[in-house]
Image 1: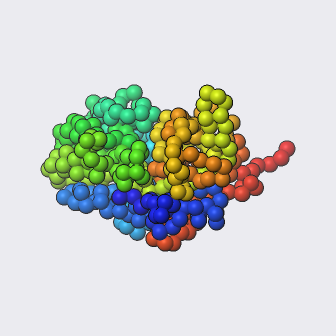
Image 2: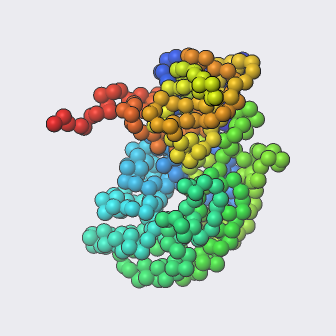
Image 3: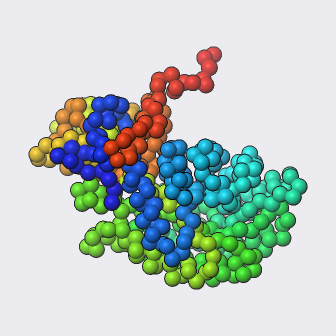
Length: 429
C-alpha cells in the first residue's frame, strides 16, 4: 500500500502533513514516500522469490540521488540509458556490476565510461551499435565488452502508442528473426563477451497476457542461445503498471491488491504466469521496473491561483504546469487530483490547468472535484515516476523542490531552482 492518506481530513505523506510542507517550502512541490518505494521493491522481490531475480531499477523513472541511494542500500541494481544516469548511479553508491546500460544511441564516450566503470553489460539495440562497442572496447588491448542483445519480439503490449516498445513499429531492439545470427557473429569477436539476452515490450502494462506471450515466444530462442553461447542471464525488462484512478479513495496503489471486479492482473498473477517458464531456464533473471517502484510513491503539490468560468466551462488555475508534470499533455495520462486540506462538501466539474502558455497545459478536463478556492492546495497523485525526471524550464519556470519523507521526517532532496539557475552558463552577446 502507498503511504499517502488522510488524517482528520488532511492529506499526509507517511507522518508528515502536505500542507505543512507547502507552508514551509512553497509550491509546486514534489513529495515522495521512502516507505512506499521500499515496500514496493520488497513486495516484488517476495512474489518472485523462486527466481531470486536481480531487480534493476529503471533510473529514467525518477533519478534523484536520494531515491537511487535508497534503492542501492536495499540491494537494487540499475538500468541506465545515458552516461548521465550512469554517473548518477555511481554518485548514489550503486554497484556497477549490478548496472545494465541500455539505450538506442550510446555515444563512444558513454561506451567508454561503461567499460571503465565495469557495468554488468551493455544492452545492444542494433548491429551497428554492436560493431561500435567492439571498436571502442578494442582500443585497449585485452579488454572485452560485456554485452546482451535486446530482442524485439514483435509483441503488442497494449496501452498508449508512445510507451509501446516491443513491436517492429518501434525503434528499439534487434528483430527476433535476426538475433541468432547476430549472436553467432558477436560470439566470434574477441573484443566482446556475451553475457545475456534482454527484451522489453513497453510501459504501464496491467495485463499478464503480453508478458506471458513475449516470454513464451522468447523461451526457445533463449534456451538455444544459452546452450550455444553460455549466456548467464535473461532480462525480461520492465513495464509493470500501476493504478492511477481512485488510488487514494480506495486505498490501492497497485494492481497486486485491486479487487477482482475491476482489475485484469494482480502481482501474483504476473508471478504465476512467468515463474514456471523462467525457473526452467536455469539462468539468472533480471527485471527493470521503474514506474512500479516509484509511481505511486510521489505526489505533486500545487496551489490554486484563480478560478474562472466562461459560461461554457469552469477552469481551476494552479501554479504547477506542464513543465513540472508533462504526462497529461504528452500522453493524455490520468492523474487523480485531491484537495490537500479537508474536502468541501459537494462537487464541481472543472478543468484543472496550469499557467504555461499552451492550450495543452491541462491536468484534467471536466473532472468532478471537491470545490476549490484561491489559496487551496491540491495533490496530483501518482506523480513519482516520469514527473520531475521529465520536467523542464519551459516558459523560464524554475523546477520544483523535491522532498523525501521517512516516517515523521521530511528532508529536501533537491532545492527549488532559483531564477539565476535558469540562465547559468548562458552569455550575453
